[in-house]
Image 1 (cartoon, helix red, strand yellow):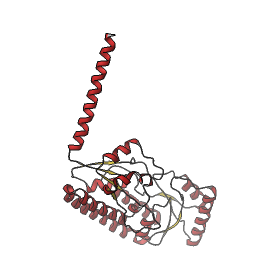
Image 2 (image 1 turned 90 degrees about the vertical axis):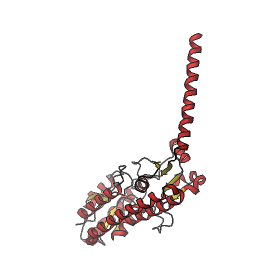
Image 3 (image 1 turned 30 degrees about the vertical axis):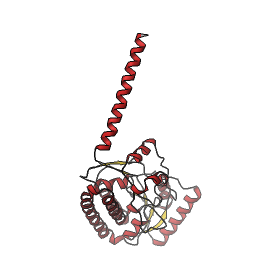
Image 4 (image 1 turned 180 degrees about the horizontal axis):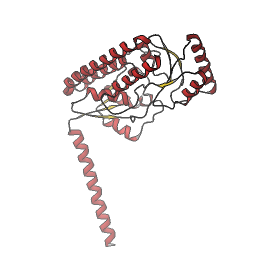
Length: 295
C-alpha cells in the first residue's frame, strides 16, 4: 500500500511538472516576440525563406516538402495546431488549397493569398512555375507581410527586392537561351506548365495525366498516343515528353515506346530541398533539360 502511494505521489508530481513546463513553453512562445508564419506548401515556403531572411520570424510549412500535388492532401492535427498558433498564413489560392478553405475563414484577415488578382489561364493555380509568376507571388507576399508585420517590414521589403532581382536575372537568362526554341511543341505530364510555356514561347501539344496523380485510362492513353503520332508526322520531328520528378514516369514511358518520342524530366518546383536558392537551381536544371531536349 505504501508503495502504491509513493507511485501515485510520483505520478502526481510528474504531471504537475509537465503542466508547468507546458504552460511555461506556451508563455515563452507568446512573449518571444517572433512573428510566426506558416506556408501552405513548398514553393511558398522557399519564397518566405528569402523574404524573411534575417527577420525576427519563425517559419513553418503545412504539407511536407515532398508532398507534390496538394489535391489529395489531408490536414493533420499538427497542421491544425500550426494554423491556430500562426500569426500569418500564406497560401497560393486559386483552388490550390481547397482543403484549407473552411479552416482559414477564421483567419482570413491574417491570411496572405499569393496568387490574388493574378490573371490566370482557366483558373490554373500553378503560377509559380513560370518565373514571372514566381516574381508576382514574391512581390504580393512581401507587400502583404509589410502591412501585417510592421516591425519586420524593412527587412521584408529589402529581401524581396534582392530576391526579385535574382529571379529577373534568371528569367532573362532563360529567355535568351530558349529563344531559338520558341514555337516548338512539348508534351507535359500534367497541367502545371501553361504559364511556363507561355513565358518562353512553347506550345503544349498534349498533357499525359489530366488529373494529377491519376494514371490515364486505357482510352485516354490511346488518345494521347494517337495525337502525338499525328503531331510527330505533321512536324517531321519527335515531340519530347516531359515527366515530373514528383510522379511515376510509367505512363510517359509507355507513350514514348509507342510514339518514338524521348522522355525527359521537367520540374514544376513543387517539392525539393529546403534551400533559399532551390527554385533558381531547379529552373536552371529545367533550362539545361529543355536545351538538350529541343536541340
